[in-house]
Image (cartoon, one colour):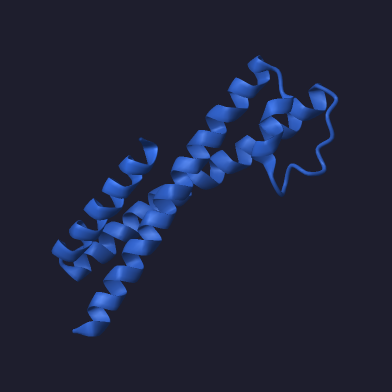
Length: 115
């Protein structure tokens, strides 16, 4: 089901990027990317800090958390995990918005260069 939602979102984004004038798409995409980075970067920092604290509080090693932090969620107690996963989700949304904005900027630049 989730894959269908993603596929529909991609189709809608492609259609919208073809219908929106290139300069409008450029500025809209810059705004979306900036919003995503403004949300995702602080959330990512808070997420890693909370994960590090939670792992240390429960006596787990923190050495691998910088490469694959989401794999360490299962080591946490339910209470600590819920506090960490919220920030993980907020950071993921911010990252998604940043990537969407970057794709929109690229699309707008290509369309502007083609004219």
